[in-house]
Structure formats: C-alpha cells, structure tokens
Amino acid sequence: MTVVRFYYGEQIPLEMHKTRIVQKLDLIPVEQRLEAITMAGNNTFLLKNRDVFLDMLTDSGVNAMSDQQLAAMMVADDSYAGSETFFRVEKKIKEIFDKEYFLPAHQGRACENILANAYVKPGSIVPMNYHFTTTKAHIVLRGGTVEEVLCDEGLKVTSDHPFKGNVDLDKLRNLFEQYGAERIPFVRMEAGTNLIGGQPFSLDNLRAVRRLCDEYGVMLVLDASLLADNLYFIKEREAAYRGLSIPEITRMIADCSDIIYFSARKLGCARGGGLCTNSYEAYNAMREFVTLYEGFLTYGGMSVREMEALAVGLEETMDEAMISQGPQFIAYMVDELQEQGIPVVTPAGGLGCHLDAGRFVEHIPQSQYPAGALAVALYIVSGVRGMERGTLSEARDETGQEKLADMELVRLALPRRVFTLSQVKYTIDRILWLYENRKLIEGLTFVEEPTVLRFFFGRLQPVSDWQSKLVAKFKEDFGGGL
Ligand SMILES: Cc1ncc(COP(=O)(O)O)c(C=O)c1O
Image (tube, rainbow, N blue to C red; front, side, top):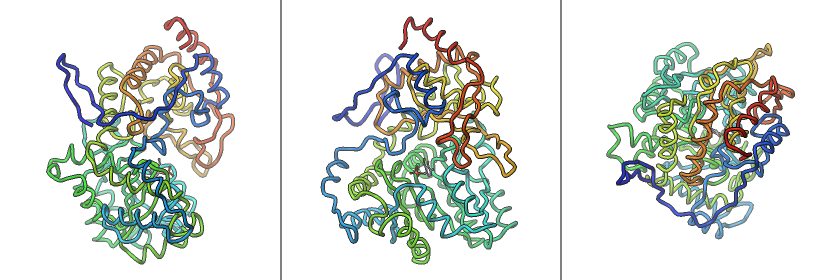
C-alpha cells in the first residue's frame, strides 16, 4: 500500500494488490433493512449476512487471503498427530518471533481460555493496557480481576497522541507494589488496542513495561492479534525505530514477551490462533489445556488448511506494503469524516474507523446504549454493518448495575484488502447524512439480556418509533429506498 498524490491534488491510498476473486453483494431497500434489523433484535451481530451490503462488523476471519495463501492450503498435510503442516507453522513462528514452542488453538479466545486456566486463580490481578471483551470474561470466570493501566491519553477520544495504547508505568508500578508477584500472574499488553479504537503502543513503552516486569519478577504476555497494525504504527510514528525493518521490529517486540498469543482470524489473515513461548515451563503449564479443549498438540482445533494459510499469512505480515493497507484506508476514512466535522476517534488507528457515538448522538443517555443505537441507525440508512463498542459491550457488575463504558464507539472495521475506495466513500456519504439527521436517532432497551458477553446475542428494541421516522426522512431525501 502506498499513498499517492494525484496530479489534480487529491491524495488517496493506492492498493498494491489486484482483485481476482469476487463475491457478489446486494443492497436491499431501506424498508427491508428496517425489517431485517428488527428481526435481528436491533443487534448487528444477529443480522443475516445476506441483508448486509458492506460488512464492517469486524476484521476477524474475513480478511482477504492472497493467492499464495490459497495455494498453500492445497498442500496441507491432514493427520491427527505429527502433521507436516504443523511443523511448517512452528518453523515460521520460530523464524518470525524466535519462540521455540508453539501451541495451536481454534481462535484467540481459546488461547485466553488456556492462559487463564494455566495462570489465573481466585484473587489474581491481571494488569493490562486495556481489556478486551473475551480476555476479561475468561479472567473473571476464574475469579481474577482485570486492572487497566492505560495512559490517560488513551481514553481521550480526540487526541494527537501517536501511542494511545501505552501503559502508564506509574500505575503499573503501583499495582506491583500493592499486590506483588504472588497475586499478579502476568501483565498483558495488547497490540493495536482494540476497544479504544485500534490504538498502538510504542516499542519504547513495551520495553519499559518489560523492565518493570523483570524488576518485580512478573511474566509479560503479548496479545498479538492486532500486531500487524501496531507494527505499521511503530515504523510510521516512532522515530527511533523508523530505520528498522518490519521483521526487526517484530523480533524486538517478541523479545520483550514471555508468551505471545494471537487470533489468527486477525493476525495472518486465516482462521485459528496460537500461543508461543521459549519457556518450557510455560509450554508445559498450557499444553494440557490444548489437548483438553482444542485438539491434539499438532492441530489444536485448527483445520490444517488454515494452518498452511497462517504460515504464509504470517510471512506476508512482514511485508510493509501488506500491513499498511488497513491503516491507510482507515486514515483516509477518518480524515474525510473529521474534515466534515463528524466525531471520530483520533488519531486514526488500526482495525477500523471508530465513530464517537458519545458526541454523534449526545442526546442519548449511556443507559440507552448510544453506540448500539447509532450502529443500528447506520445499518438502516446504508446497509453497512458496524459493531457497538460501548456500554452494551460491557457486563453488569455483581449487583446488576450497568457498567458505563469509558467510550461509546461504533467500530467500522475495514478487513484487510476487502473493500474498495468507492465503497469507503459510500459509507462516508451515508454517515454524513446520518449526522445531519442525528436528532432522529433515539435509544435502545433490552428485551432479552444474556448474562455473559451480552452484546453477541442480546436482543433489544427502540425506546420509541424513531426508526420509522428515520426511514421516512431517508426516502424523502434520497427519492427512493436505496
Ligand atoms: C485483541 C484481541 N484479542 C483477542 C481476540 C479474540 O480472538 P477471537 O475472536 O479469534 O476469539 C480478539 C478478537 O477480536 C482481539 O481483537
């Protein structure tokens, strides 16, 4: 990916790949979109993909694969134990991360389950730059507590801080002082911090966290699911490391980490996950949970075809042209929206463009899920499916009280190499229209509220008939149903 300036002035991100396999899309009329989201309980997770025009729910498992990945899938070695495919992935992990032991798992949260089983017990404290939904759920399930030690800038929606995913070292030291290594099994650093808008940590910050962990004798675990974006930002924004290659930066990050785990649905553009380490002790502590929950040690619940694709995908992640595609498209979208006065998370991060629902629909109280309502409204007026990342994505506390989210965001993920610039421009246009008509949007309330990870399959309804008013205004302005 490269950014080019046109002769007549516009500056756009230019794809360094061509499309050779395509999938047909449909844009159903606005009344049908209203019907579809109503059937889906006003939860974008519950929409049928056939009713979605542009699926910006997530990048997970939906990044475009390369021809090399597809070709590699053809030579997968299907055997329960000792598959050649496993040894190829293990070799690639060793080459890229310099880690001796590799444990495959069926996806990222499976790695979190394994980690939590091996290391978290009642009373454990797990510090991290910021939580991720599934990570926190696994830690809490085993009686542990997540403590966020994010730098203050990380929670400022609008900022020019290049590394909002950084840890505040004083906060971390205080936790170490308060609980000591006995209560703290590991510190978790999340690359491309998902829930705060795909924001990176700096390599200097990671190295400082490592030094602090060494001082107190605590393990450092890296969640590398969104490492590709973080690598790009270190290269782009951290002057001290600009001269290094992507593989060199990767190795420096890996050297700071005792255990690395990742969702291969994100990192490596395949489907699966894995953990790696140089510590035989850690490998030994975790491997029984692979055989218990995932599968035998040489496939861990992954299809061998996906494992082949992962090996190639990891290699391709070391290519700057490949990893820059996502962040540059996202930066384009964020810049265009910001120029038009739309509240978005800045600076542009990885993973997707994040609308700040807290300001977009500031008239909706957090108890009525403004980000959920905005995601629903955007689907109705565009067929674009985004994801709520706000209070709905939180869990209630022990007393049943809502935990109000730090930020109310709607994430519009741009899976790697999937969308064209005209599709991004269409999305921007419909967001602009929605912003002008934002006062028509009102809140949501639960009809069916699951107790665990409620955002995945909870069902909601609008607090009034605001959705039909939105549809009427849309038809008036666009002279039809699309
Ligand atoms: C940072 C991070 N960690 C863990 C996970 C969980 O991975 P998976 O969806 O493969 O279970 C995700 C998924 O979005 C993620 O973004």
